[in-house]
Image (cartoon, rainbow, N blue to C red; front, side, top):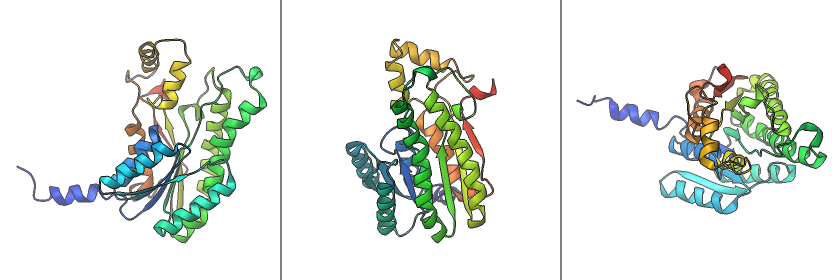
Length: 269
């Protein structure tokens, strides 16, 4: 027999970040998309930013049609002028900024280090490192104005351990890990928490793209990658989105400068 308290409990759970305004970069696809949907479902007003305009607009429309609130802005996180202007527009639209999810990222070239060109290196660092820097830089004044908030940076298992591929990507994710800790210390006095999330292999368009370049069938590639994880399967975007939701919410009010590893046991080996 259902408890008389269950409806109230369910309402509380569904309002974990009610009234908060969240920016999610790279939100049109993959982990960013799942995160935007989940944050909106749990009460946040979500600013969806990306370069994929069609997918981003469709996502904002979907969230709005489900009774939640979201808007889309085109944003190249590697361009400071765009970041400054878009964040200002988001603040004007919603009246506050409380949460920043630095999710935008690219994989880049998979070659040995001595074969990587300067352009290939810079392309990855511009998005994965400079993008996190610029978005954090221009979110901080709004988070301070709000009296505090949460920044969640997407790193990777390869921000913790190495591997024999994509050197620019691994370098960028290691940088994000340390940037997170530095900013956690700098802004703790402002009640701004900064944490990093470290996914294992998650089935997203980025990972699917790696599979297409592997020379294997997609089924064989997925099976090979799944076997790398002790749990025996590849993760899903929602697996990461729920971790981000926790770090964005006040449930993690005593958590800053930390690494949330969601990797099916990959780094435990």
